Length: 355
Ligand code: ADP
Ligand code: MN
Ligand code: MN
Ligand code: MN
Image 1 (spheres, rainbow, N blue to C red):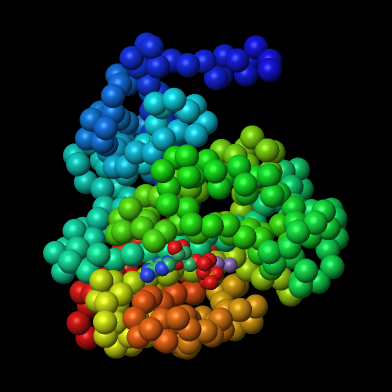
Image 2: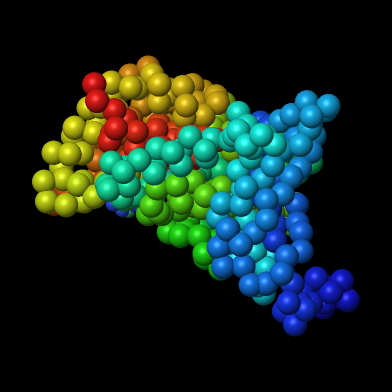
């Protein structure tokens, strides 16, 4: 090991201090930002941490003459990069007067999840984050010949081998880093389009699903930074006969998981159909390029559902149908969706909305 690596791995436990990396979402609503500060150990909950601030004029979130944005610590994870007792801190953002800033989607989501009717239903979410890895210099998918295309889709989904899977070290490093951090990452797989992968977070309860997915995205950005690849959450990175990238959101409530749950599921799907337009509007930028009715998607303008149907907006699994209870999958969200918005909207429409 080099002296540089030795120093990076120095154990600072004895000092009684730890490093807290404060993470927030920047002005595009998709860019993750972070900065670090030293705090006294031990930190057991976000409440033990001080609020902090950043220059919102540099992230497109505040005017220069009144640039301060305040970070409120909301969730903590173990830091897989610094290890030891060091932590990652997921924050949301407020004006100095205490109002959530417009890009703070967590605030409204937390409100919905703290509604007693929603809390009682213990909503679970399993989010499948699909993403594409790009070559840094040319922004073209990993493994693809520069200026050209690989052979057609078919051999790549869950594929193995040097001519089928590109970027596995990144995906595997991310997998373990997420488990270490305390994220409920439930699996990974190679995707249909070469250079595209998926990880799943869940089932996680309520607002925690969003906190965990954002932390997992942050960790992925950090690992791709180390590996010299570029992370793309574009829902259709390559036009033509190539699969897009989604963020399928698997969902269940307590009543759906209990006896008679299948009836509750059917009612929930009916309500989702009534608010299809509103959901599509909130399910990610550029999703119209992905939801074409081809490549395992449903057409963006039409709401549909079906058992085991990967061409429907909502898919119910065979097991759920057979057991008469379980969960369903909303296949519409794009890879670049905000999980706070999507999870809370699904909970709102299926639990609180009364047509
Ligand atoms: P797919 O077959 O669509 O590829 P995945 O296996 O990739 O599905 O992802 C399914 C996700 O759903 C996982 O994260 C899993 O933990 C989650 N899940 C399982 N059971 C439930 C449930 N009852 N409610 C919500 N999510 C669930
Ligand atoms: Mn999946
Ligand atoms: Mn997938
Ligand atoms: Mn899926």
